[in-house]
Length: 102
Image (cartoon, rainbow, N blue to C red; front, side, top):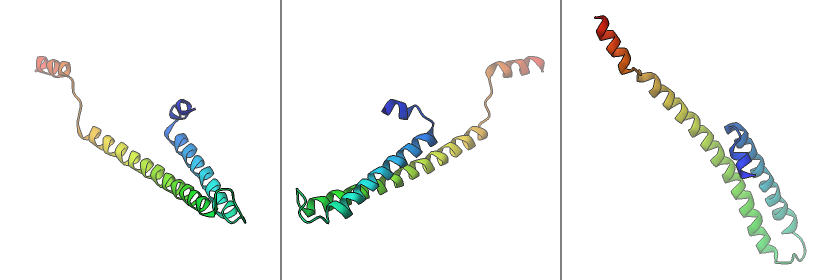
C-alpha cells in the first residue's frame, strides 16, 4: 500500500494524505464527543477524552505539515529553476569548434 502511494504524483499523494487526516479527525471527533460523554465507558471518560483530543490534534497537525511540505516543494522547484536559468551550460566540444573557426 505504501509503495503504491509513493509511486503516485505529488498532488495525488497530498490528496491521499489529507483524506487520511480527515478520517483520523472524524474518528477523534467521534471518540471525543460521543464515547467520552457516555455514562460508563469501559476505560473511563478521561482516557477517551485524551485519545479523542490526541487524534483531533494529530490530524490537524498532519494537514498543516502536508500543506507546508507542498509549499516548500513549490519554492524549492522555483529556486532550482531560477538557478538553472542563471547558469548557462556549455560543452567543451562546442568551445573547441569555436576556436577552430576563429
